[in-house]
Image 1 (cartoon, rainbow over the protein chains, first blue to last red):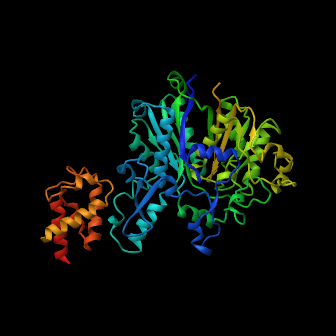
Image 2 (cartoon, chains in turn brown, blue):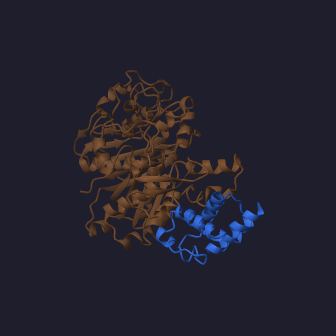
Image 3 (tube, rainbow over the protein chains, first blue to last red):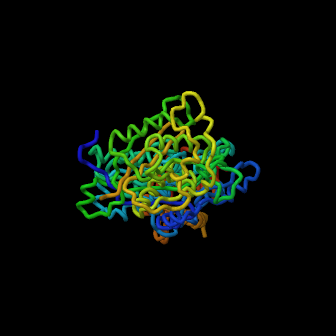
Length: 449
Length: 87
């Protein structure tokens, strides 16, 4: 349980962001309302096999990496070369693309935090990083070689396990930074990014660790994209920059994206004592499940209980609610109405950063948490671009018997959903993320005052 | 150049593609050079080297060959010759 008086500060951050050269570029694009979505040549290459081709992808070259292809397949990156010499070859040999982004984000976070080597390598430092998907890019070719081409198991090399295992990102970060505390990965689909940060927060809050590198990543993977494309849930029929459109009446799905978000967390008094810059103080984290047996559908009741759990642990009066807001037909409005039911019809803004960079799946929660930290830092609310037209009519579910949430149409809440960056005093932000399986997660983070 | 010398030269070419081996350690390789002790290669890398050698020399090793493989360059050259003669 929480140790009374013990608080958790965010002291560093880093990651991988589509079309961005780094955190500064990401922040600039965020507040200037730019889209980070492009048409993905790799998806276009497959022609009619693919339903949607819009994506928030990141190439190897954009991350300063060069794949080394195995002779058995020109699609199999045997390892990567770090053209900027940030990560040793030995560590690159055990990493898939997402793990490399996790390691880069960890190095950036530690540098920003200003941890000394003995702090990073302490028994009191944890690594808690996860991914939404498996190491598909690695596994596909390895399995194809075995099952279809009759090759020996060893033909794909000796690193298919470490490059594809569930906690590969955490393991690779830990082997790179050599921490001696906890090393684990939390998996909760599209809530993974926030779930890992929440778990790391608890490790510190409960007095088990003093520091943590935490977050989520989702390495660029056509295999991952194919799964969602096959579910017919991806946005279709818009230009790249207008394809992710949470809350807009014409939204028809989310834009699959890839990226990584890593943060450095530290017990507040320790961070203060060494004079660290504090980017945010976590007030509370709470997570729960819908409990309705539905793998996919969002639950108003489940989200109401999420808010209650969050409020039970801290004073919650956010100036901004950073929503999950994916751009799917039902999810956005249920979420918005739940926020309104909790917080009322005014006094805060909604931020839906997926409108700019799409849905990063296992990285969504952590990258959006970083977006929230930038909102605190710059005292700006990032815009919900493409939310051009809001429905003037109530949603069908608002008209059903038993619905006990707000009954007004979404267009009545235009003032909550800014289309351009808003400058204002921001003291607290609540971040929300949900995932398949009916999992819900919420974190509240405040400015250090 | 003897057959063993030719194999050694080709083997060094293979080793140059193994990113976890420091290229500086490939300058004075002899048959007595030990992958683990002298080249500081991780033990998991021996499997990758074996796979690359199979591809380069167009041979297939038996599982037992690799299970029992020593860690010197000589051991690998012996195995390549054995596998070639088995074809």
